[in-house]
Image (cartoon, rainbow, N blue to C red; front, top):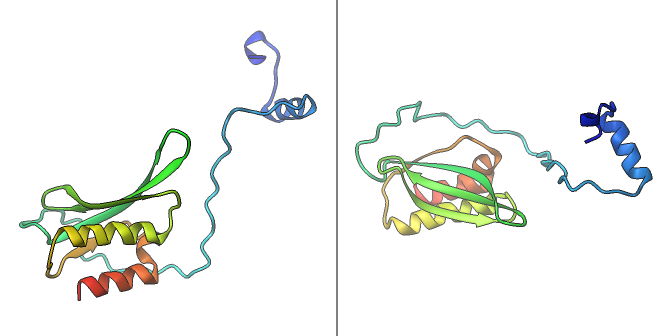
Length: 142
């Protein structure tokens, strides 16, 4: 508002003035992601951009996103059957940890009873490359 009236004011000077007047900005602070202390593991890409699938339950894809839930961020993990392009499992959580993706995979597996050799494809984020998640994939899909 000050700059629209022709008075130059940088954000640093505005912050300093606001502090002096005990004013608080209504803009939320930027979310800072935690750094991971584990080594990053690269998993081979067997799908190799071949997204045309001939039958259900051959290839599942997964991803995590966040949605604003009125007063806080919620994280959503989805597992999609690449043949039908429909979700087969999903889970929500207040924190973006590996339990979120584990739960989504277990819901997907429970909804499609007795699967045989499903390929799972993801963006290889930390949720999907964690040791526990890889062991879970090996357990349900030997």
